[in-house]
Image (tube, rainbow, N blue to C red; front, side, top):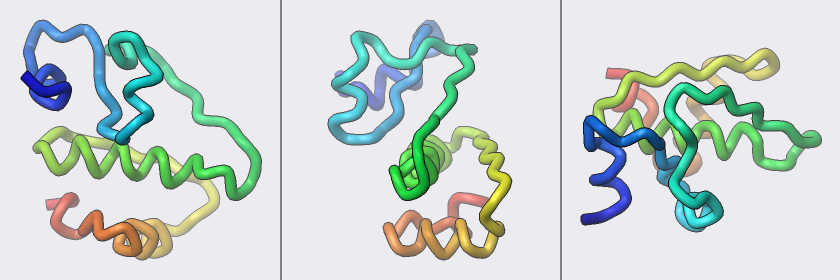
Length: 92
């Protein structure tokens, strides 16, 4: 069974990010219900990381919410397109 399949098990108590290599840093994943703060300086990749996690889960039918305070929705969607994450398709 793959790690992605484990994410969708109803009894799973952890969430995988879907970011290659990043999930290997966790023993099990992020505990469900945990609050996680992504912090770092300008240009450190915070938005990229969050959008990649969002794209991973949205592409698997999960409802996702992204809250940002400095970039417009249009800019974020353009950013996702740069990585071929197809934001319009994910929003549907």
